[in-house]
Length: 284
Image (tube, rainbow, N blue to C red; front, side):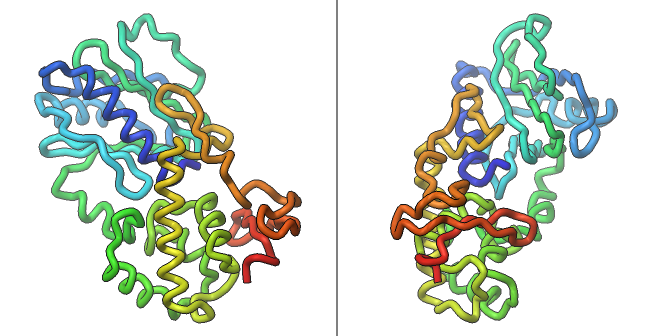
């Protein structure tokens, strides 16, 4: 599943591709083409008509990320896209009639003349929906801090929220209620770098150690963005190329391989339904 770095990269690539095409012409959503409507939430015909009606004549101002969501921001509305487990956007320029439709293509958004964004999702856990911009705060009211933009007072607030919880620290930093965008890959990697047992409870962790963990999360997420994200199974860039951060993983996906620090075997254990990769010798 794409995590924060991968979604951030998709946002940046979509912006670069789309806004480089405008040539002083405002970006407006002019057409929507659908091939398969059965995403996580079906896209009925009336919703497509509503999409065009509400965005018609409104310029696309920005494409940005919140948590693991992509936001296409218009003047009064926001088109929200979630990639689910296998979703991806790609770029196409030309007559859509000449486009070679792929097996899992679901819909295409047309901006300007014959400039298209194509959404493909084999497992169909992703979705696209339109909301009024004024409803955006309510839409994300149950989502926590953005790790890359946290300041010290945010870190203190987060520590006060989680220090008494009886959940493993890995589950907490992956909980979107507290900290957004940190999925399984980057949680495993950050905990290893800070030598923290992923199954340890917060009350067993010093506050200063938790702050160091947050700093490590920021660094790993930033490094992953610079490296193009982690291409595990389905994730690809807008141009369908792969990221490179998976080559830098220290524990994730390395079960039974030697730890890069102490040479003991990396272990895998299921926590909350997810594979947790760690070194029992390094992480205590």
